[in-house]
Every structure is written in structure tokens, then in C-alpha cells.
Length: 136
Image 1 (tube, rainbow, N blue to C red):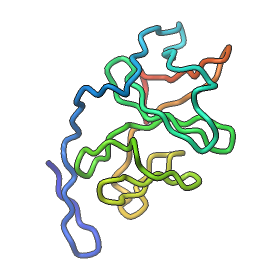
Image 2: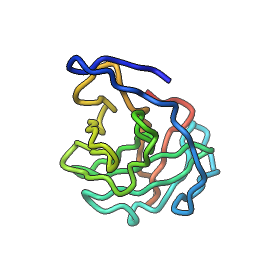
Image 3: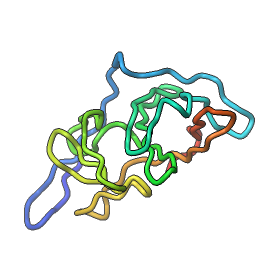
């Protein structure tokens, strides 16, 4: 458990938990370049998000501006899933406590020290591929 300061208040950043969840798709095919096959490109519409589990990691895929982004599917504040959160442009808001993150770099908008893990994504042959071996 980590406590950081936010506007003269202490904010708890909890350990992220990874419960099994029935909405996840388990990706298991790893390509030579370290990318994992996740879902069909057609399953992720513009401005939409979809939770997947790839190599045991909970990842939230999002499509904005025609690009696919991948971030950790758990908020670092209390471990809430982002599934059901609000996506407004490149900003993802946690449904539990309203924390807002930039999906392009994982940055929490109010505290620079807090970031989500981000995963590189690409589309090949109609499939969304996610690089799991290396997150930022």
C-alpha cells in the first residue's frame, strides 16, 4: 500500500488485485515479436472499450481516433476494473471514484507519479495484437 499527497490530502494507492472475471477473453497465442493475439478488430468499435485477459494480465482495449490502445484494466487507487467506466476522447474515468487517466500514456491527470501500465497494440490480419512482454 502506498500513500501519496494530492492537494494537501493523503490518497491511498492500493495493490492491484486480479480476480478472475467472466468478461475476459484469454489470449494465448504469442507471435515471434512478443505480441499476443487478442480479439477480432471488428469487436472493438470507435469510442468503445473491451476487457481481455492476455497471458494472465487484465488489459482494457480501447479505440479512439482509429487507433487501438491498451492499458491495465485496474485502477491503481482501489483496484476497481475500468470496465463500465467512461471514455471521453483520450480520457478514461474509473467508474468507482472518478480518477481520470490518459489512455495514450497511462498518466493520472492529477498526480504525475501515478500511471497505468500501457501496452503497445497493432492490428494485423483483422486481429488486435497486444505486446504483453513489455509494458510502459
